[in-house]
Image (cartoon, rainbow, N blue to C red; front, side, top):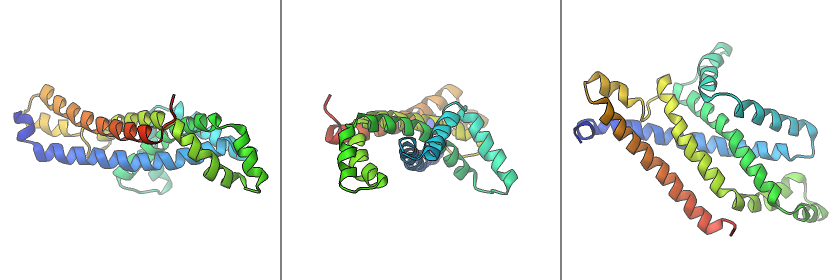
Length: 214
C-alpha cells in the first residue's frame, strides 16, 4: 500500500489524464465512426469509397505507427498541437474505424422496408438515416460499441510513451524514486480496471434500457 499512499497525487493525476484521454477520444471516435458508417451505406459512390478507404487503412495500421504519424508527421506540415491533442486524434481516428463497422452492422439489421417507407414519404437519405435507421441500429450495437470503447481505454496507455500524462506513464517516476516496479504496475492495473468496469457498467445499463432483446 505504501506505493499508492505515498504517491496518491501522482496516481490521481495519471488516472485523470487517462479518463480525459478516453472521454475525448471516445467522443471523436463516435462522431467520426457514425459519419463513416453513413458514408459506407450512402447511395453516392464517392462517399462509399471514402468510408471504405478510411476503415481499410486505419483498421490495418498499428496504433503505435498511427501515433508516430500524428506526433511526428503532422508537425512537418505546419500542424503544431499539444501532445494530448495529437493523442486524442490518433486514438479517436483509429477507434472510429471499429465504431464504423459496428454501426454499419447495426444498420444492416434494420429492415429494408423501413428505409423505403421513409423515402416514399419524401425524406432524403440523410433524414432517413438520422431519423429512422440509426435510432434502430443503435439499439443492436450498444454492446459492440461498449467493447470497442473499453479497448480504447486500454489502448490509451500507448500515449504515455509520447510524453502524454496518463496512468501508465506514472511508472517512470515511481521507478526513478526506487519504488517496486511490480507494485507500481499493480496499482496502475487497478486504475485501468476501475475505468474499464465503469465503462462496462454504463453500457450494460444502456443495453438493459435500450438494447434489442435477443
